[in-house]
Image 1 (cartoon, rainbow, N blue to C red):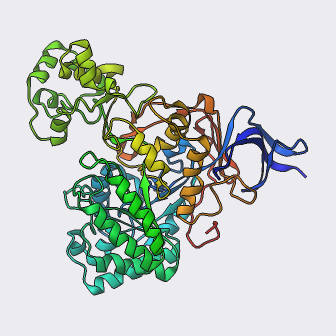
Image 2 (image 1 turned 120 degrees about the vertical axis):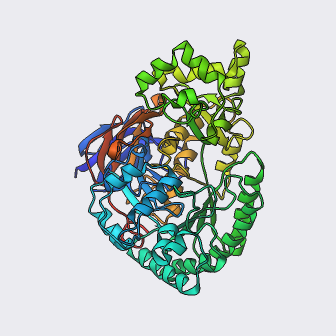
Image 3 (image 1 turned 135 degrees about the vertical axis):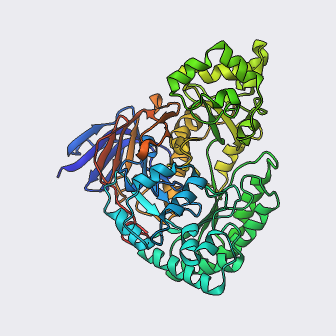
Length: 580
């Protein structure tokens, strides 16, 4: 009998962490029907894909995205789709768009805009509100065409505002009746297919009006009361951005682990949380990861989410930069890019800007101007582990130039599209050694891509490609990671975190989500700012070359980095027949 598809002669990196091997993969319908080490010359198929010299991997599962709004108008979900991702999990960090009381939709948009830097105008124009409750939100998503699979968590901010109104939005304490209503809403969402509950406790997450995310200061009775819904329904995890995560409170992280450990042990459900290296305490992450691993002895399941590269912001004329609040720049800031660059190249304009101080309307711009030893040329291909010699300050010193003068000229390169990198998390030692150690720690999971979010500041949805290129092939300043390990970390391990047991490995009976990759030529390109959101909203997109094909449920969704237009993706419902 002929199979639907056979992928022939590729180097199979099957997601289990085992040694790669050359072989064939047979697909029938949406499932892998056979994997043959060494190949099988008797295989017949309606379509044979020659993968000789190529790498075949499972599709990647991104467990930390914010496509909650974009998914309602965009079936493709770029930039994640560029990077071999076939399943995304949304609803992280306590923000999302359901439940929503009629008339409060704009408040949820402003919350998402403030926390995740997604243009509010794009969300307002792009979202067609077809729901009030969370189950109705899932039903609406189920009607959308999708090129990849999506799963959702129910967000604390929306639940709190739905139950408590203005009291919840302003972070007033919840009373027992409030908690009981929130618990029931979360339980209903879980029964409808939500994969968990998310919250945020860091004061770095604020709505557009400056108010911390609802739930930031929730007491234990609220946190544990809502957690009871997970135990009651019997599935789902608890996800959060913990207090102190970005160094705003050095005493907070250990306290957060204490209640998370007790919550997980009491509910029997996993807890996953963001963890990064911070300058003020560069070794604290190791203590938190060790505490998380130790908690397993008490019956707790704690899984720190770690990023495979430094976290920071992109700097450029089209986004953040140190001159943005200087008066002589501010008066021309709204010019189209080509006109802006032409004006900035005028010696008189340059002299005026460099002679001025910032107006303090943008404190972050002022801060960047003092950190030129930590701002690096990003380059092409982009370098997220830049050596000290690539900093603006070091280049200026080597060339005998004024640092601000050099920064000004660097921003004008590539007709004003050049980007610099300002890493302020996961880069305390000026290299990626701590990131590598985090990634190897048994309690850690790969996450924090924030796909779909921080549209004008980062583009970390490209992390899967960074893992395959930098960590598995290109790193020069330290040890690398095995290819089979980085594939396992972003396929099987991230799928299992959410109870998805039907994907993440290339084995018979598993879902036919996979990538065919020219690993030798795989290249990550620099981010580019594009204006393709509703209402002309801008976002960073970052592409890669070397992905020969991506398949979802046995259907090719991308060839050579371009969408085929196929939409075999589905809404996943926890507790349904999708492998958990």
